Image 1 (cartoon, one colour):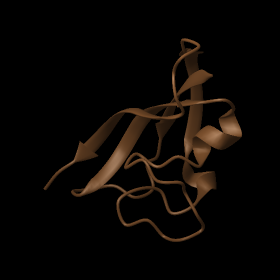
Image 2 (cartoon, one colour; image 1 turned 45 degrees about the horizontal axis):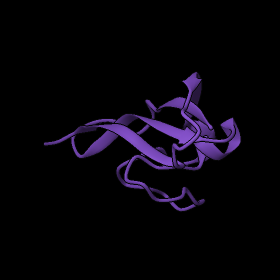
Image 3 (cartoon, rainbow, N blue to C red; image 1 turned 135 degrees about the vertical axis):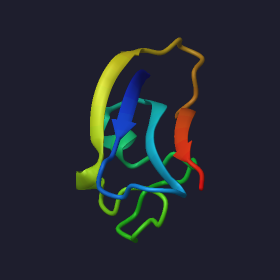
Image 4 (spheres, rainbow, N blue to C red; image 1 turned 30 degrees about the vertical axis):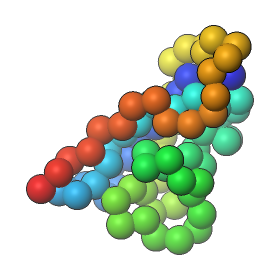
Length: 79
């Protein structure tokens, strides 16, 4: 399991997430995890990126063996 930083700068402003840290087995799977903990689909998310291609995925480390897939930390811009 790896740890990834996910960022997006397409959907910005109040009431949106700009980034999150997730645990996932691969970059492709990490990109599909939304900061709210859902799985990204082709639907337009009002609080996150519009498409998976809008998500920047950066490998930042390796997780412990017992780490479960999902969101570790998220950055939300409340308004």
